[in-house]
Length: 232
Ligand code: SAM
Image (cartoon, rainbow, N blue to C red; front, side):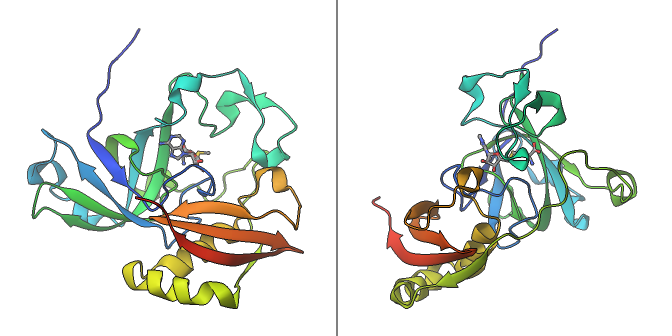
């Protein structure tokens, strides 16, 4: 049995590369972006009534990793990257059908020119193709008593600080991106380092918007060293 789907929309996100994107939605409340619907789905009728919902489900394609295929077992970061579990016991991007599912806050529905949904808290790469949108229904979708297997609730791991030398560029960039400081804090608090590698000498780079954020981690503190404009 096979079906063919096409994208009904495309995500505009501050996350321009996979590195440092939170592993699930809702972990970085300052991540704001849009889902822009594509023709012929970009009509106001298709979203009539959606503005009454605070959250929506986005079904999407893991387009940046889809070509890498899948394996029956994967090594989730939650288990330190060592133990293997079945792909269907995880939210791994490497799936037989590379489909992801994220619940995000819906801030608004803009129908002035085509249709754009203003969203917050996504875990999605810029350009992610959306294949479906549904309203989140707390009375069925929220299961407060659910058990979480090997994936307990995430905690914010790192404290986040800004080196004084990064401040001028940070302030200048914040004029263009008012959520920038909050977004950097949200993302670094989750400790995006691979396998929690602990090398205080290592300086990491992560791309948010059109900025390269350079940071290091020493004794549980992520320190932002520089905020640089990326080349166009
Ligand atoms: N919430 C979704 C789910 O459960 O299906 C996604 C979970 S997946 C573990 C989240 C990770 O997917 C992010 O940290 C990012 O590295 C990666 N990701 C986000 N958008 C992607 C895309 N379009 N293609 C490939 N990987 C993507």
